[in-house]
Length: 189
Image (cartoon, rainbow, N blue to C red; front, side, top):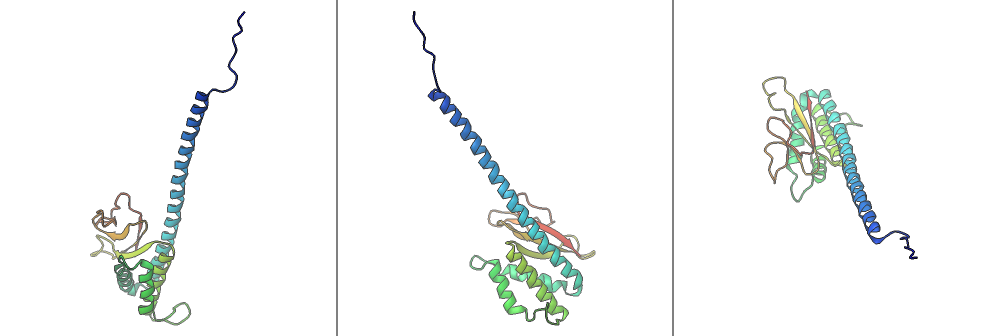
């Protein structure tokens, strides 16, 4: 009588298949984890950008006669950003050259308050890793004038304009967001 021996243990093929399935599962979870980390980072940036924009909007309501000072100062700082000068450096230079008083502790004129509050909003934007801009909202020049406060991050510029490889604008000239832009726009009046 011949006794047929039964196979005992796990064969190499079964081990390889199990390792392949485990590898696919681990890679899937890793990709999911990376997406969740990016979503968390984006939500923090969005919350910070909202805080900066709300603060500036409230300042504009408290000092409505100097809205153009806010707009000009914020745009001038953004215009000073270049390949050799980052946003935070431009904000620091603005404070040195334009902000003469600390309006939190000293008495200021409306114009001095406008410059101080502009700097404070830009400093908060810098501290939260976002860029800040303020323009007249498209289509509101002949109506009730509204300001569009724009914050951006991740390579998107806080401007309205055409989108190209070298210029990743937040929105087009009518204020419609470009696909894939990392920015927020708030109307203030």
